[in-house]
View 1: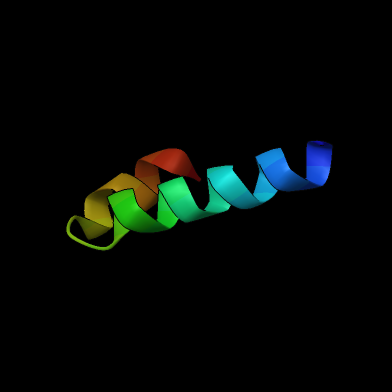
View 2: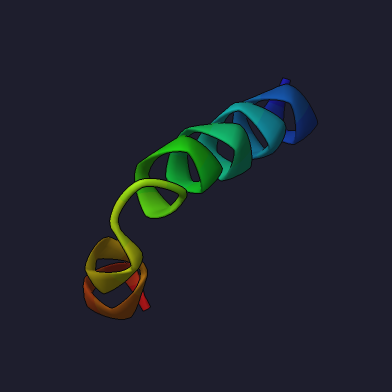
Length: 28
């Protein structure tokens, strides 16, 4: 279950960071 959650979170972050690179800086 944790693995699936991690993958979902990574995909979600990927989606957010795709259109706005600034979000990736805030996330990190």
